[in-house]
Length: 293
Length: 256
Image (cartoon, rainbow over all chains, first blue to last red; front, side, top):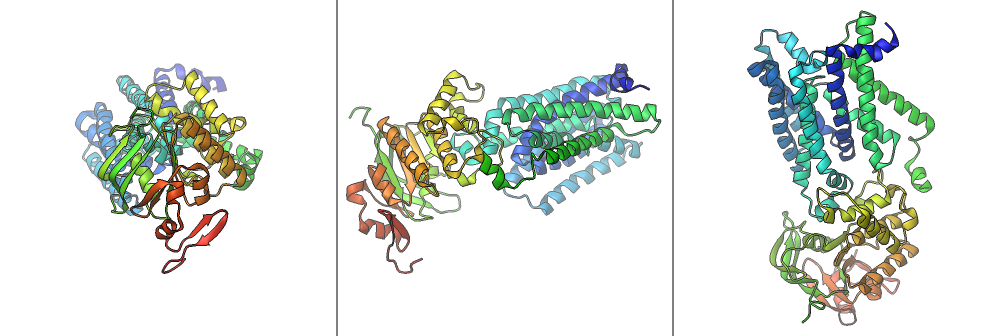
């Protein structure tokens, strides 16, 4: 198998083409929203959402088969977004409280899944995704959910950035912190929903966190963060699928696709981090950087 | 009375109280167009509470607050200069982008900045003397430049009333003078100013009136009549104050 086959030819096959299409949509949306997650320091809530979505996926699957995945996850994610927004505003961010909530929801999910006939198979699919077997009829809901998230963030972008930079100033100009937080958390929840059905609820976090972190390493220009994060995510998703295909078909080692994609994301981050360190973009004392500006 | 002399801000028996219970009460004063009022009191006296109450960030629990004669402040009438220490210096944003935030309220959710907004940003940066640094990263500026940048953001919103929270804390002499110049120019343009400060010398230099608070309003009136040693003593009770570039310790029962 040639390099060209893995990078391009493989995607002529319908299941690979669908996987690439879904991953590209997801990567771009997660990249853009991930920048805000990074600027707001919301990694914690994002992590919480990825866990809370799991019982929704499980219940959706139990009630409606694979067609129930997205509705189930959407209900769970939006409920979790409400609860986590409230916990955060109430100042309840103790690790113990959150850990109890998250493990509780997770165990509910496992119990629901354990009632199904193919326990191990279903559990694996929910946790680690089924990107290579996304059914064609799921494309529209997946893209719809992703675009809805992007739209919500696009409309409130100016206000989200002001809130990230200057929370008091944001309230002073009359923006509702509650509304902005709900919109952002709901957008994150929608991405988690779309991603859970493809790369699995445990691996979504990489999609939301890594591209934003890469963009922060590469640039200090606000408006460049978003295209850089989206481009990184798209390229990493493509290379992830291509290398999974090359290893699975070319070398005959059957790797899970979602995990391979995440591995490529993390490898990309490591590469950018190493380059930034070598070029001296980061790692210098704060004072030195402040002084030269 | 014509509309030109109607007060921009008028408080009648107003109180602002945090949900926790602390607050500031008995507020009874008015600010005319182009008038500057110094808000003076020791730390914890409720100066910030008063400013945040006017912005609607702390609940009003008594009395009336009229802004331009109305119970509800119209969008973008009040500019606010917060204390700079609260902002993350690592945030990836340029000075120009910070100043543009001053336009967001006028733009609302669906519009993005246009030519008029960029012009307002340039004027605001010119007004505080930072136009050459427009493209610099905000976090890389000196403390005084950041403070002037936030003032430019408040100016870009073209307010009729400007609230400043301790804007002179930690400023060196050039930045201090730049800020004083800007305040004087604003007054000429009929912008009203309410500025909280420890610095009584500043109150004398740029303000027309002084408002003493310590949990409640203690005194309000023209600088010449109200900025007296008696009032300062009553308000500060043993805290260091600066008058004419000298630091005095006002006698009190404990001292600090």
